[in-house]
Length: 64
Image 1 (tube, helix red, strand yellow):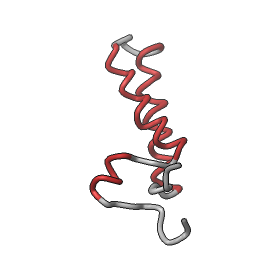
Image 2 (cartoon, rainbow, N blue to C red; image 1 turned 120 degrees about the vertical axis):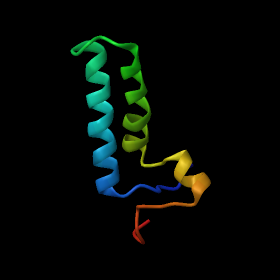
Image 3 (cartoon, rainbow, N blue to C red; image 1 turned 180 degrees about the vertical axis):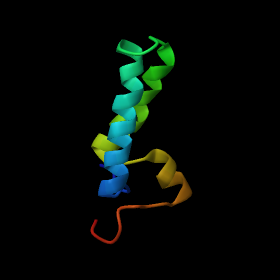
């Protein structure tokens, strides 16, 4: 369906960032802004970033 355009390091960083942002919803200052963490979490798990597609960027390298 989608071509993977994120490399493994990019994906790991996105998942960690997403989980960190989601943690502030439940553990930290309980602000709804933490729900923004869903975006990097989902794109990291799926391996596809729509913004990368628009900008014609790929961190996946040649092993696609």
